Length: 441
Image 1 (cartoon, helix red, strand yellow):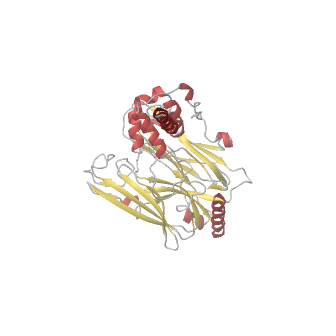
Image 2 (cartoon, rainbow, N blue to C red):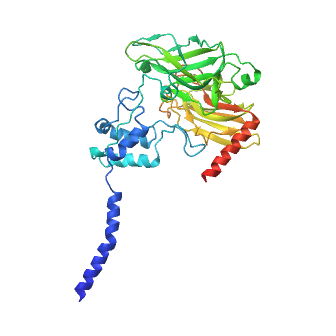
Image 3 (tube, rainbow, N blue to C red):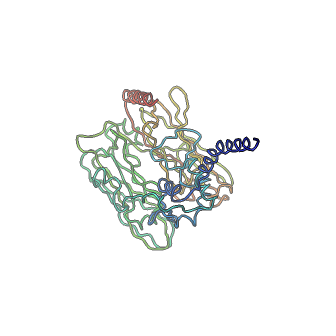
């Protein structure tokens, strides 16, 4: 009789343990490229890592990605890729254009590489991602072709030569005020993008009243748009636009560098207007908020030393901060933007703790996270520089570094988009934000 009891007990153990065993096997399912990694690459990497794009290699297929598996592992663990340098422990964390990897995505990539980087079943491969034709305007599908295209004169970059800066001024040809709802800027050809480090388009115009001029960098219109790696265009939020005035001009500023072949190209600025009669209520401006008291020309960094600078910019009207982009050069280490409210309370908005000059990221706040600030608030911009050998990007820590356009010189400012509004409109926006937050709870 003992034997049947033993068998019954054994059977009971098997019945109880079997589901646990099956669960363990399920959780240990091999991670494969086709099923697990390809969707991540499509979502966060293919914008650059695809054929004929700006990245040095394509990662679209397993055969293309597999040779780079260990390098991919290292880059994602250190959060060098995808390039997203916001400190995830402080400040606002909701962005419209967040391309960073989640902790779970990084863990999946690491496990895939550590297990041998298996390909998996080809049937698990997601459909190819369809990318827009880079020869066409990005916003054309939404708005049709640009209403106004402004072109810079051609510039020829020699196969070998020093970096060059070209700053032509081109009239817009406008004869009446127009409100802008979207802007794109780009080198005209894909080849031209090889030799263009970045290009700026500044709007030069005379403001009709002092109030607008005070908020808009002395009435010159300020920076209009920038093209750089990771940045190409901007669409305004609903009921928001940028104002262009009759007689305005575009001041282009292109930074070119040689790449071993002669390339001639120009820059094109595509502007999409609101239809007449549908002008937005709010005006948005993009300003260069200096991080150094008195301006970037006061940067003074001795050899083998660090440097910290701060600047305080008052808001003469209430507004919504739409985006934040720090700008420094090779010694730049970090930059933060804080808001000091009229009550004295200080709020950290965003902190880039791992600045990398190779990437010009504009961090566009989500609609329900873009900070609303009352009149009298102060934006505090702080930047940190490292001119020591511990800075891996530092070309020569023994050099004294000051302000300049060259990459080996330094700058310090933040490109900040702000939509200005009246006090009544500000209160209405705050109330709307609170109502929407309550509805989501």
